Image (cartoon, rainbow, N blue to C red; front, side, top):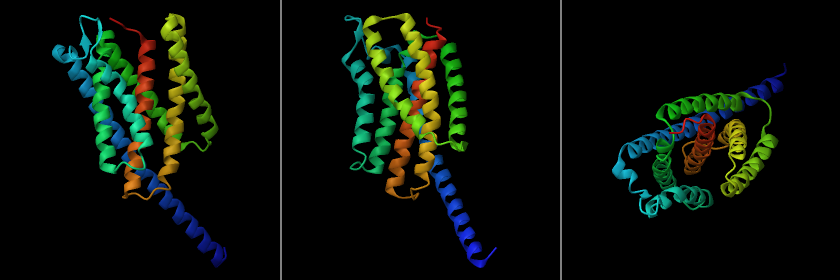
Length: 244
């Protein structure tokens, strides 16, 4: 090997190692924030569901529906996602972190309703299955050499179709359609997990860790994977049944 080739190979290897290190460091931050948010959501959900006085704050007994706070809790998560997404450039890293933590608390409050609808054994089993499926697809997304970009684009379009189908079934109230939607939802968010991990891995290789941009990107990455996990969990829960 000539001296030029040796230097070229050494430079390429060094760049590859640096890129891999950047990706690993970035993804560690992403998963740390994601796991923190999931823990906050799970604890909040359990505490809220176990305390009747707290649940009554979300329910209007006379109207037999949600209270004003209940509606705020159900709709606020979408507002937080939009705020963090569209305000990415203007929001500071500490504010993004605070919003993500508050968001995970509100999600826990909204998910407390599942304890009223499903047996706790079903919820625990579904959570374990979700964790296993999510972990498997995350590993696949990290190690696969196949470019999942086109696959991810199809899945994102599938999410749009899924939302439309759910809105239609809200009025039709078809149990068969609900079952089909749940199956498709599981397939879509299982695939999106692998796609999003690969995408974030590539982003991490281009972001210098330790700066404000990296911190904000890590929060948004954690939010993406958090949503994949939560949606996968909810669609699996609908398939598992075990309603009270």
